[in-house]
Image 1 (cartoon, one colour):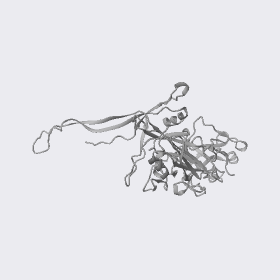
Image 2: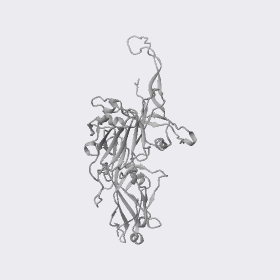
Image 3: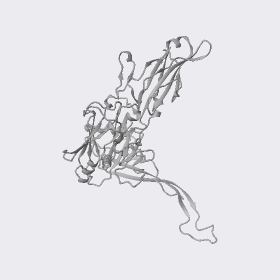
Image 4: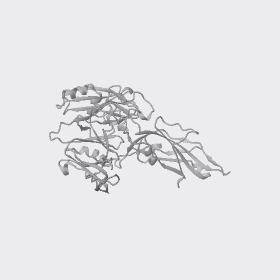
Length: 464
């Protein structure tokens, strides 16, 4: 008798940061045989779903014994979490300033011209279950295997406040979190961010919005350009196709199930002649960019997002743009435009040096020699930055910043030299702010936050 799968995740799209529970049974074997074990062969694919056979090589194999109810319970969360990670680099065939991304010409995903598929954020999961036992002759036997459906894994996590859904009828014991609001198909559906629908950026800032594309509903993204008086001054549609780094067809390739779109001002300066003309004319400064997704029938399939362009700061404060991994495994951005302070601290080792020369024909008094010298200097830089006055809607975004395992300083638009390695744009930092007090208008009237980061790399210097 084949193993029966009794309980599965309710939805085929799985954030890996949750319980990934499967329950299996085999009542006849459990009731009549000895040394019974349930086996789970886990297959994870970065291309198309795996179709397990008797000769397939699984990614990992797990075993458990029947519990008091005679079933085996598996939680694969800690397994699947190891096979997805953040997309720091763009997928091949995307572009940066018209240069196609390849293995020889890699580009950070934040800098893409238009679209990019995901490299590491999504994977396929398929599990084959079977029951192992020892028969009356003492031989180890394995029954007929049973395969699960194919699941799409995403590098996301669930907060304890996220609402889970229970199944009904024959699936009453199944539970899960629905990503339906992120599968773009209606005017209320969302890109993969908890940031407010209106975000702020400087004219030289890079950034992306990411979206799920399980059925490839998205045909194009419309950009509407408005001036500082909110009057429309331009529009263009960016097709989601292979030429632009996206995907034009329904496919089972997991890299095409989650895509990034470069829609912040610097990305558009890289790729859009229309936007470049507005920048040159000075008409877009202080204006906004409206971003919205449409299907092939020109129907709106996402909510409207607005990127408001900051006016130049008259006090001359240095702008610092952070990007960080958000709840959904993609990137959020914020530009700190108010007062910031940089502090460089050093810690090094010293040695005592003899004065003069001792290994030459004559002794000379060289005044630069002798005394305590620095052998090595290790310097680190910390930056304290302040937001402008913000609204309560940005609290969730800043809460995810304080909890994020990956934070970077993202430099703005620059004129690159030929064959530039682009190493100057993305700088890893560690958020040293250890607490976040969520402010409200009722409690605090005006809301402003301060954060401190430390650059992850020590400043380079010479060694003696």
